[in-house]
Image (tube, rainbow, N blue to C red; front, side):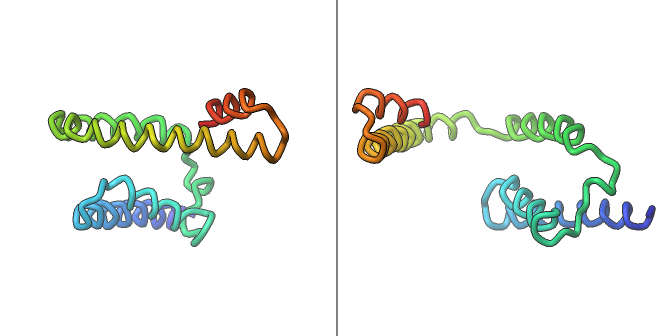
Length: 127
């Protein structure tokens, strides 16, 4: 039992380091390969990591780790880079929201026979 726990903890550390390095090498945020590694190694795919056997509550672990990760990423964020990306992000977000509102509205109107007002309201709520 103790060996399995230590082996899983070692696997978490090694895979975390490898995933973070892969993120640096690919020039993407480290969170993306870390999430992929966690999903692949977890109970849904490879089932190599079993959180219940570790005796660690995932909610407790997440409540401790997530704020630290977000704080660290906030320290690394360049405000000038963030400001330069504001206009394209706002444009893409606006187009995506409008597309979603009108897409859901059209489906609700034609598939369910709702009025346009209610259909677009439903689209706005779901967007």
